[in-house]
Length: 119
Image (cartoon, rainbow, N blue to C red; front, side):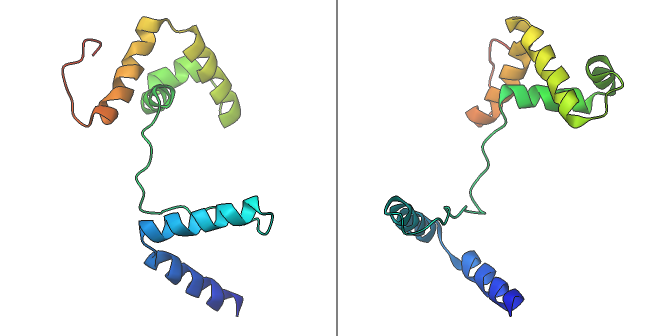
């Protein structure tokens, strides 16, 4: 019975348009403000994702290059400790070194590749 209800709910959620989602989220926000509900907002599954920040572009570049992985992470395999090491490396970089990741970050925002002075 629970599975059938969940399937029915998922089918209903797929039929919602972006306007329906906005209207439902506004209603839910009003209900939360009035203290009548604790339901969170609906996320639009078709909404575009935000582009990665310059720091996350830097992380992608590290993880794609085995030499950089060994230089920065060493023998560390735990993800949380790798994040600490990567953050320390990012903080220790000069602005000129960071500029490469910043340029990679700005390209998706521009929507096209243009001649940028930093790249």
